[in-house]
Image (cartoon, rainbow, N blue to C red; front, side, top):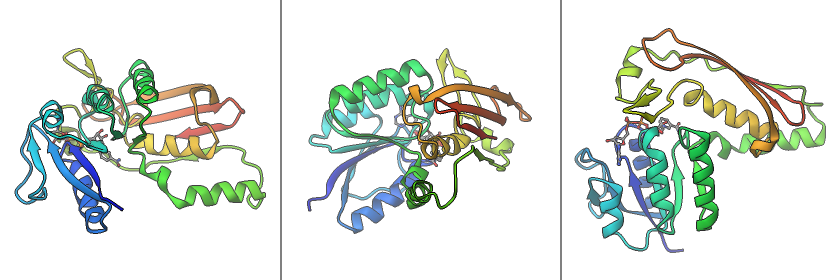
Length: 241
Ligand SMILES: NC(=O)c1ccc[n+]([C@@H]2O[C@H](COP(=O)([O-])OP(=O)(O)OC[C@H]3O[C@@H](n4cnc5c(N)ncnc54)[C@H](O)[C@@H]3O)[C@@H](O)[C@H]2O)c1
């Protein structure tokens, strides 16, 4: 099998996890990291010597033919333009979560994905867990009875340092551009996505209602103390807090 030609956009922050993972996959002969893009140059030796370094995705795309996958691990407000630009180049896209900052942008991204015919995966890594399939099998076999509801509780404390780490952390918008970075849309979104998967809710039509209680203890624009109550179209309650 030939190694897939991959580019990574955003090499600091969570991008460093992608670099480690790409290193592991390269050693297994699965991928070749051919280029990275970030306005802040990568740390010395963090990127393979063979990977070209660019200040942004446009420069990377102009100089890098035949990519098969682009990974985008940048701030939320950049996901829509970078994700759409990636899909225009006929590559698969791995876009960090949360995918985009609004439902309108989500619909635009879905349309672009459909038009491109390429795969788009969002960085909700728990959806790749074997545990989910095992739970589905236990449910289907009746081993754990009838599902009455799903709840998930996140008890991580996000302190001042967390919200000071990046300009966009805890922001609703920057210069009029939606960011919508809060607990509900960012860390807790892993639990929401996983719960919806277990609930069998795959599309917007599978969700009947969403209610939120959003509070903040930190001096931020968005929520850091949050409750999300969802009812699926099948009537199943999902509560994440
Ligand atoms: N899947 C997970 O568990 C997980 C965990 C943490 C963060 N994330 C997600 O990863 C994304 C990045 O988060 P972070 O905490 O690393 O942010 P960050 O701000 O720490 O780092 C983002 C990186 O992107 C670069 N960047 C910014 N704009 C860019 C652009 N236009 N083109 C190229 N590079 C650009 C920055 O210079 C920086 O290196 C977010 O969507 C976040 O929600 C996912």
